[in-house]
View 1 (cartoon, rainbow, N blue to C red):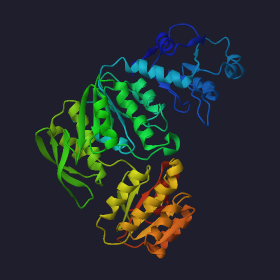
View 2: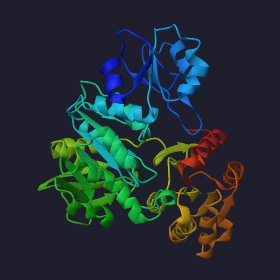
View 3: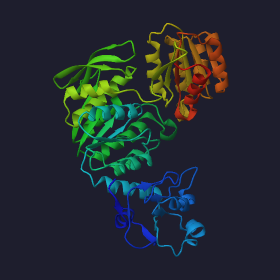
View 4: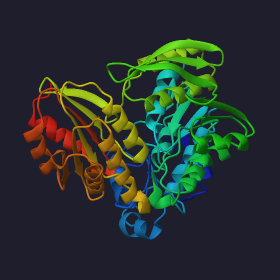
Length: 473
């Protein structure tokens, strides 16, 4: 990170210097008093369950050089009186500390002229980001979000890690409500925008599939014809943005005419796919090791990002083939020597649950297939029917046992039985102990488990529980 001066901080935030004097620079920004390093500027963010103002003193005692605050009254009570004669620290007052973080990140982003790729969509954001980084990394030094740092705190903190040696930034943009993507775009100012797809996610906050489409489309609208947008041509809700954008448009797809296309694909034994990648008139054979038909789309959207960065098809193919799955996203491993776990516990909505189930159904394993499904959260009024749809789907696919966990997922179990799945093969559980007990009784060598649910269900804890109960290989 390029060092900030106090003058730049005041300019970026329109803040007021309450305390401190003399020239001072900051090597970086921190929002966590537990990990703050010497000389950093602490921003006292207010969250739902915490208030950074309570940790200002701690951050300075651990080596921070200053703090940005908004709660002056609290600072008067807890900090200023004890440090009124101490000019060693800069204390800067702003109206909103989260907005200050956004403004600082945007001010910093504008110091660089490199392409910034913004990725959004109901499914596949993280995979597309990671796969695109794998592709771009063949030729460029890439900055990307780490983990799921894709929100109004994570994204600006990602941008603040940008360095002079970076050639491109690839960032995913998450959202749970209208206007959030617009805010993230105002911070990152992407020159390339990608919409992977539009599905039923965050219905509780947004209301309808059209509202979700429009919220995702904020990414396209903020680029305003000055850059490149990349659209899924097989998703009618996404491709509709093509005629609304005045700049360069790249499309990707399987079934529709597209600039980046997959042809002649076939499933491999590792549940990945081999296919011909076609970009304009050039073609190359690609082996995708990541399980699932839906990940062909993630590979195509990532390839389109490579095209937008000027990369050739051979380097793009190498980047796709070198990509490896992320943790908790169709992550496959063995326990007890011959029992397969597919850990897809990172998150779930109706579209991603359907994709995972269909991938699991066609997989070739010697034993039985167990689906352990947790609640799909934030679906609002469509929650019950969405879960019932998954139940009907499970009953129609090649799955031997269904175990559900959670209040909403009971509808999956109910509907699976109503749709013909044997009652003695369906279980609805209230806690992980019940799930573990059933697996201990039913699970045998050669069997396979797919574990999936929304982030809030903590399904990865069940994975850990199963691994601890059995010897991992």
